[in-house]
Length: 66
Ligand SMILES: Cc1cc2nc3c(=O)[nH]c(=O)nc-3n(C[C@H](O)[C@H](O)[C@H](O)COP(=O)(O)OP(=O)(O)OC[C@H]3O[C@@H](n4cnc5c(N)ncnc54)[C@H](O)[C@@H]3O)c2cc1C
Image (tube, rainbow, N blue to C red; front, side, top):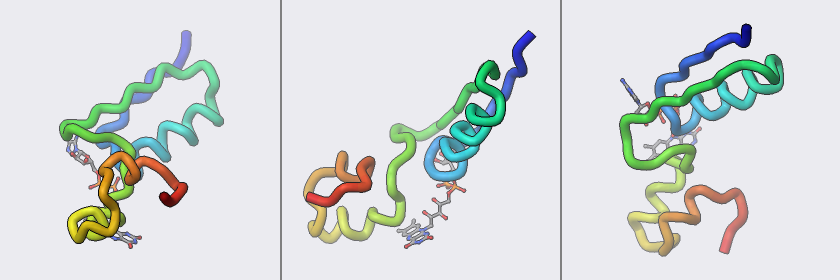
């Protein structure tokens, strides 16, 4: 029977934990719960979005610029 892993929070630490857990246990059933609207975005980039330097919020999901 596969291991069940529940992760609370899906912005920075949660997805990182899920990815690490997947590498350690390819058969695990991993669930990430996020109470907010967005998952795995760059919160650190929020000031750039709010200041208008980044115009598209979706760019906060990407490691590429532009
Ligand atoms: C404006 C800003 C700029 C920043 N700049 C930098 C920077 O330049 N460099 C740097 O290293 N760090 C920076 N940080 C800090 C960095 O964003 C945080 O350290 C990082 O986001 C922490 O990640 P986390 O996953 O631990 O927590 P969070 O990002 O806070 O994620 C936790 C998530 O858990 C969810 N959650 C909580 N309780 C529940 C529940 N009961 N059920 C479901 N979901 C739940 C929340 O909705 C939240 O989305 C910045 C932060 C901000 C706000």
